[in-house]
Length: 248
Ligand SMILES: [Zn+2]
Ligand SMILES: [Zn+2]
Image: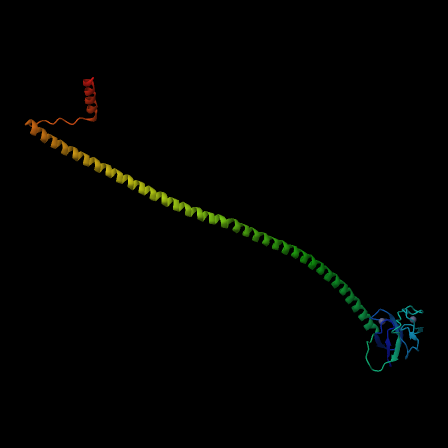
């Protein structure tokens, strides 16, 4: 049985099958088409509907067959030929139904996938914007922290310098005070020693003078004169008072 090759007037897709009055739906553009009983070819200036196979005059705005309203594009047009052994698509009725089902299922899956992809894209955009906010906040926090650190270092540095300077000064002053205290004590000790030495020397001198006086007195008086104790400063005042009284 000879087979006919048909090209869809709506999209140009080619199908192969036996001549038949059955309707087939184009898998490419959903146009309905039939397999005529032989070769069909449009004359110049006309094209063919691949469903009802009437000749349609070509014009720029041609979109559908005026007879059956199936798609007829001016650049394409339907055509049919007795199969030359080349093997375009073979839409047997069962196969065609199966193909249609598969296409519909695939179209539905595609829709579903598109919806999922759109949801994912929306979620990704959301996450990206959240990430951008988080990143900005983190950068801001880092910048703030770094500023605080710089400020702390800037504030502490002079404080630390001041502390060191004051401590050094305190140490120097303490050393000076200590050495002054040592010096003063040493001087006091030396003065005390000098006074004590002087006292001792005076005491010795007094003893020498007394002995000398006693010797001279005994020389004059010829006796061992009892040397009266030296007058105390208090007695001296009294004697002085008596002398004044005698004079008066
Ligand atoms: Zn088509
Ligand atoms: Zn038609």
